[in-house]
Amino acid sequence: MLNNLILVLNCGSSSLKFSVINPKNKKKYLFGIVERLFLSDTYIKWECYKKKYNKIIGSNISHEDALDFIIDYIFLKKEDIFKRIIGIGHRVVHGGRKIKKSVLIDDKIMNLIEEASIFAPLHNPANLIGIKKIIKKYPLLSKKNVAVFDTSFYQNMSNVSFLYAIPYYFYEKYGIRRYGAHGISHQYVAYEASFLLNKKFNSLNIITCHLGNGASVSAICNGICVDTSMGLTPLEGLVMGTRSGDIDPAIIFFMYKNANMSIDDIEELLTKKSGLLGLSGVSSDFRYLESNYNLNNQIKISVDIFCHRISKYICAYTALMDGRLDAIIFTGGIGENVPFIREIIISKLSLLGFKIDIKLNFSIKHGQHGIVTLNSSRPIFIIPTNEELAISQEAINIINNI
Ligand code: ADP
Image (cartoon, rainbow, N blue to C red; front, side, top):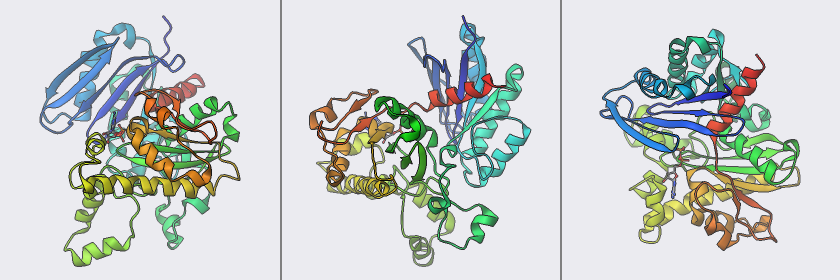
């Protein structure tokens, strides 16, 4: 058996995802998630060779404790897999001002990831804890840890796209600009689209919509991302599960001055209590919103606003396409699994030559690639995202070049 597997780690603020993948044949050998970190009943579920497992591993469990459990309890019992790991790919949310692409991790890179925490205070510190722990736990592979960033895909955006219209000084001194997020997913589905369209990546003109709990749209022209809906942080842009997306910034001053709210209260409101949850008043979970769309008018309005904003962004991004739009791509939990949302969004794009095929749209099953438009239309594809695979492929490319 070849030693050719990559361990992919995604240490989030309250969860930790792991998988062991062969980046070449795309096979996932083992994968799982630890949820409820730092809460009661921290829970792990994992799958290996199609067998599913789950276990409560304790209370108030930290990322480090969870990694100890994953390696000591799961990996060491699967030595055939464990021994074949040749490197680790870490998802890192923010590369900050200095890190432009995936990179082998050393002390300098860890310092830069820490520096970039100012832009992703919930995520970068957790990513870094995972990196440090795994280097300590796994010294043999300590020089084969690769950081893959959600911001890298946006590094080629021009300053026309990434600057805010505030005094330039704030960009120069504090790095306030649009950095984007979800880049690993947008880049992955864009590569997949180039195969589906039989086009070279550097001549691809597409708009990618990642619609999950977090949601964003990216405009890709000649294989380069030229704009994206998320900004300094993932709060900007589309309506999301609990995030407001675009609002008039004066709403913040209004809340502060008139609603007796502190800056922390407003931050919590806009990031955790707004979006579909705030509008509907009941849930951010699209499964629930979908089944109640025709039963509850407030849910209908919330979902319609969600779709309206996506259609608006898609139309705006066609202006950046250099005269040719090859396709639109939907991905993410909602983009892949909720046909009626695609129908509402696409119904607003007829001026651009997109016509939905209702039967095809409803026929695509969970996890499938597919086209949802009529023969007479420009194509719209569903492409399931696979961020772990993308991270493993970035990691192996870098490790093979050491
Ligand atoms: P994230 O990775 O941003 O946490 P996901 O891409 O997993 O989010 O998407 C989560 C969203 O997708 C949730 O709103 C969830 O309800 C919705 N979703 C996932 N699968 C389905 C499905 N089969 N039907 C309806 N909604 C779904």
